Length: 331
View 1 (cartoon, rainbow, N blue to C red):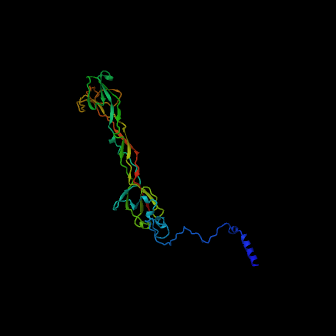
View 2: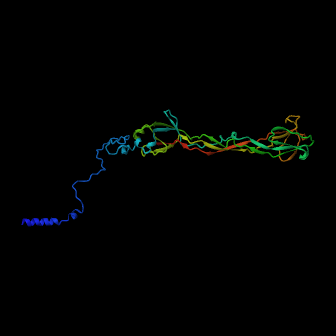
View 3: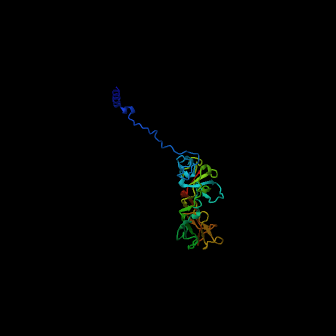
């Protein structure tokens, strides 16, 4: 009887479907798998050593700048490579050592002084006057050209009872710039004075006690805490301000209406009696040569004092770029 029971049990065991009972899974008695994302150390509340990339002072398995407590440390700044140190910018000069003059904006400049009249070549008046030994500009004529004649110029005219004269219209010229381009130094709209603690490093909470800003070379990214206000400054420029200069003859140049052209019976152009003189005040017309008493006289010289006055102007044609950029991240 016992043998029959044992044979039945063995037969029943041989017919079991173990895969269906385990749903195809392999059972193990090894326990729960290890979670390797959990730090095996016992954390503490100490501040991480942010200067040591291998340190893990607070046992959270996040060494150096990877630790959240280093997010506000100067050694872990996003722009660490250009970090200079800490500093404070002021509007007035201080007595700190190694003070740096910094600027924000270049001033708008005028070229009036650089392109003044002193930069213009003298103006010229070109023309001539013809003296005749007969009335109505007939007979033999003697012409005096300006230039080369200047001031009192002798002229040989036959003695005549009714001499005449004709003045050509003068042409004003000259007044060209000596230098077409003049460079002047740039001017900043204002100065600031930066006192720095170069190379100073530490937590923001400590740095902010005695400094207003973090200082960087070039364009830098400011941190998200404490020193969040970005300001851009410059220390120099790339060049000069270029002025394009021009000159022109002033209105009324080479005028003859006020005695600038005078004929005289004196070979030295004397004006006092007994010398006789006549101002030639109109051009392109034939005039009888007469003194103040309307008496004719034979001219012996011509006095010429007409001038062309210059005006000058200038405009900025090129400006420099600011250089030596500094970024200040301030509280």
